[in-house]
Image (tube, rainbow, N blue to C red; front, side, top):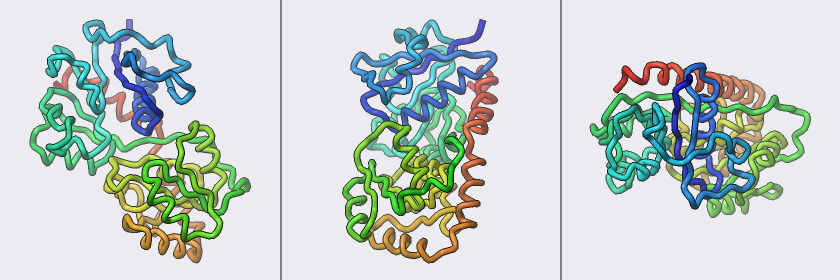
Length: 299
């Protein structure tokens, strides 16, 4: 009998955070020793963007006593009524430095005993700096898995991906004569197709991100990435090496676009592809399953 890892989600709309939990859910599915289950809030949406829509056989009621390990992220801690760690291992996925902010709800949850997995070194540094993390802190950089790129299908010269910061994205678009601007959420497969169709993509994150997976997805899709500094992308968005990483303002972003137009892009694209391969879901899975295999000895 495999051991059970119980996840929990409040799914209101698709987000990168939900996508990463879905990835970890599937890492557990691939384990020889564990299998996943997941409980949702009553208010969760079951539209076509919910990754678990076609995995309903794994959906259960929230009964932590039936599980061997709990997997919580963000405000999932609310589901534990006494706000204390139960007498079983908890894995806490931390995807944003806001967990270190004393004004944020998630800061108090650091005092709960858990094995914490941070999606970037920047996030781990912020968490460790609080001195409040109760339990070991690991770093597993986000992984990405996209279909093989098709370079001859680039039909879009410049794409602006601005879901997270639409106002800034629109301001940048005003400086470009011919650009495709996307600021409304769309099904993931359609979004990936856009990345694979664009020669250059300007990604507009929020000013502070824990990792910012879309930029890595762009590298995997073979589009030239321009992504302003947003804290969590510093470890893999290397300015002038595998992308352009300007400061977080309109003028700097526009200047980076003009610089990219006159730069030999071949080497940058090659290095970006290598970065994406180094951040594969397979690598993420291997690192996570090695932690899961020794979970009982870590707490």
